[in-house]
Every structure is written in structure tokens, then in C-alpha cells.
Length: 273
Length: 269
Image (tube, rainbow over all chains, first blue to last red; front, top):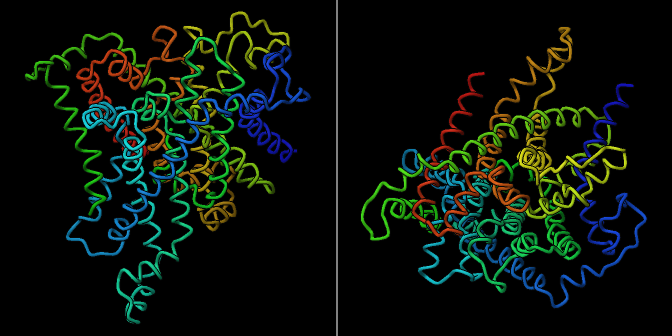
């Protein structure tokens, strides 16, 4: 009896968690007359892909989607290129006094910084150098905000690799760089992949910076594009839900792939709300 | 290290820049007017109070639910992986998409919520959710609870899995009931995880922006105005960067005080 109750409670929680998402998906697949029919249609409605076609064929959402892809990919690669060597340095080299710990604390403290605090000066700075409404400007910002996380996360993976493996390689004639590239990096590859996935998710989901730093049609990201639809007087719910579904699918796929490291990633500052 | 330089350029330098903007007037001379204005601004007071309410209420409920769910799911004999994966979905969605989904639910005329309630014979003419002056704040808090309880659930259940079995069994053999085991064994062992989870969530709650921006834009009136939204509006709708920068310093100070305080509170218990 108790077991039935426990499973029932878990099932209710699951339904509550998933129902809004399911509803969004159904709206994106319904014909306009069915979308807000009474009583609400959970199943058995006539499915159509017209909203997906409307949103993405030649429409502005195709541009937003492409922008989001470019941004997420480029800022992730950049953050890894700068952050991984830094993480290795923090994990391996001798630092005078408390340097390592202090640098670590500082990196973590950047996470406490509410983004709205840095956005005003960033906006003014980027305006001065004419990088507003450009993907490059936003990519720089995303790189910078993913960097502390990359350093923090990769350091924890580097520290899990025993020093002896590296020392043995160097006795065999490898340089430090050679040992890092050929011995250590392959060992931390799953961690590296997980770190990259979290960077992608953060850049993909980010809204506030994109909203403020890109205000032209050609530079908008997917979340900003969706938001600009919501605030209009007449909302095209079908196209917007379709765009929403397309925006959430990659995240879910990526998160599933990196599930093993989700807890570590979240503890170290990935995925912000 | 190049990483440190980039970090400096994007964390400390903006702060210095913001300090300059907030302390000078349009002619470039030193002034405290932006900070003085804070004390007379009713909207800022409302936004600050609502941010605090939002954070406190959402954090409390998300923690209670998250811990409950973690205990519940971890006690299941089968299907744990499935439940865990499903429960995490809300947190992973782009916040903008989650908020769009809730607009489809909350809409008083054609939303799913009122539609379903009507099916069960409830009179929904008074249920305006995010568009009602008095119900808007609680409605956006509900969305946050839906979206971020999974975060606390995930961290807490990872903490639970890391608890060694021996002390639990020892306590049971000594005749401790489930509540006693929870209070005297599980809770103390889980404390570091609880602290971390609360801290991370609290820092994100104080800065809440995306969901409210989509759901209500801070309205109706100022019913869901929060610090981040008000700073956004001041800077980017009214182009008053100096005042916005001054407010962001207050928000920064509050965030740091709040997380310090929370850290101490949890440590004392």
C-alpha cells in the first residue's frame, strides 16, 4: 500500500513537470482553430506541420536559429581554447602561497555577479567599439561568461588524473605539452565533452545579454526572436510554439548526452536561471 | 595567463566603468545624485521588496519540494533513472521557452489552466493569474517553482546517493524510526550539499529576469517588478545609464550580503 502511494506521488510529480512542455508541443502541431478549443484537446487533434514551415521557411526564425548555432559553437570553442590551458595550469603547477585558491575564489565570485550589473557597462563599452548588434560582440561576451566555468570544471577533471601517469610519459621523453596533448587530454575527454556541452547549453539558452546587445533582425538569437514575438500585440502562437520546440530540442539532446556530469556541471555553475 | 586577462577585462573592468558612470553627471563632473535618488524612488523600493519576497518564497518552497522529491525518488525500487530524467526537463529548457509555455497555460480566456478548471465546473471569471494585480506575483513564483525545483532535486539526490550506508543501518539497528534517521543521520550528512544548492539557487533567484520579462514584463502596474527588470528598463528604455548603474551596485551588494548571510545561517544549524 505504501509503495503504491510512493509511486503515485512520483508519477504526479512527473506529470506536473512534463505537462506544460507537452502542451507547448501540441500547440505547435495544432491547426489554428484547435489551438485554444474548449475543452482543451490533449490528444486526438489533427496534426499539422504548417507552423514549423511558417516559422522556418524563409521566415525570420531561420536567421535566429542560424545565429544561435554560430554563437553557441564559436563561444564554446573559444572558451575551451582559453580555459583548458588555464585549468591545467591551476591544477598542475606550483603556485606561490594561496594563489591557486585565491584565483579559484575569484573565478567563482564572478558567478555571483548578477548579469544585469555588468550589462550596463558592457553595453556602453561595446557601443564605443561598434560591436553592438554583431554576433562577434555577443560571442565575446558569451566566451567570457563561460570561461570561469570551463576553468573550474576542467580543473576538477585534471586533478582526477594521477600525476604519475604524466611523469612517466615525461620520463619517456615527452615534453610537458606533448604529455598534456597525448596523455592527459585523452584521459579527460569525457569531462571535456561534458564541459563543452554545458557551454553550448548556456550560450543557447542565454537571453538577457542577447536581448540587450542585439536589437536588429539580422543579429537576434532564437530566444530573443521568440521574445520579440511575445511582446507584439498580435501573437502568432503556432509559429512561436514551433520555434520554442525547435529551441528546446538540442538542449534536451545535449543534456541527455552529458547526464553523468550534470551534477558536477550544475554545482560549478553551468545552466543559470 | 590569458584566461585571467579576459576575466579581468569582463568582470572587474565593467565594474570600474559602472562606478564611473554612476558617479558622474552628463557634464562629466562628480555627483552622488544617482545614489541619493535611490532613497526617494518608490518603484525601486517596490522592486527591491518584490525581489526579496520572490527569492524567499521560491527558495523555501523549491527546497522543501526538492528535498521531498529527492527522498521520494531515491526510495523507489525501480524506475529511478526514468523519473529523474523526466523531472529534470523543466530546468533544462531555455527559460524563454518555458515562459512561453506558461503563457499558453495562464491566459485567462483561452489558457489551458482556466480551460481545465472550467471542465471541472469551476467559475474562472475571477482567475486572471499573471494578468491580475494581486495574483501576478504568486503566478510567476509558481512558474519558477515548476522550473527550478528540479535543480534542487538533482543536487540533493546526488547528495543523498553519496551518503554511506553504514551509519543509516547502524541507526536503524539501534531502533531509530524513519524520522529520527532522517533528522539525526541524513540531514547532518547532507548539510554541505544543502548549503551549496541553496546558495546557487539564491544567487540565481535574486537576478530573476527572463521568465518575468516574457510572462508579465513586470506588470500589471508594478505587481511583478523586480530589481533586474527595473534596472533594465531604466537603462535601455529610459537611457538613464547612471541611475541604472547605481541600482546595480545596490543589487550586487545585496546579492553578496544575502549569500553570506545564507551561508552563515546554514552553518549555525
